Length: 183
Image (cartoon, rainbow, N blue to C red; front, side, top):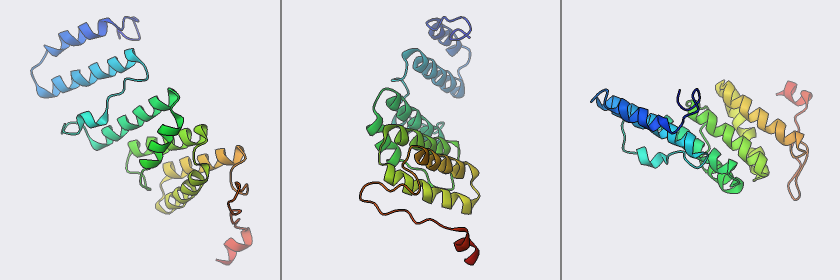
């Protein structure tokens, strides 16, 4: 409320200091520390998402939450102009298909956004998203299939998609309707 409603972000810290004393339970202290980090990130801007390694030993922080924070940090770097570096991170942290949870979905979406916008490894992105879409269809993973199809459509729209070979790469094989009927 202080942050958005009253536009008194500086007063959020004092409120959280008072709230810390409301309970001695570990879960309450953990909750307040997480809220404090969130408000610090909002006040500090894009460079503030916490490092997911900081919570590696914390049993109250799930693997999904750590992976989500990793994507936040990646997006922060991308918005700060570090397109190639964050695209490389996104490629290194590609999620499995079918997706396990929302953290995997945002990881796949961030790969799509960052790699396309940065112009990073489009050939590999097209190949990966094509495979991701096939696996997603087989697994009935609509989120992964939709994100992969959207990425392929964006590449195609930008003139780099299916049927548009890049220099030195073979033309992708097109599947005709007669091929589908005969299989």
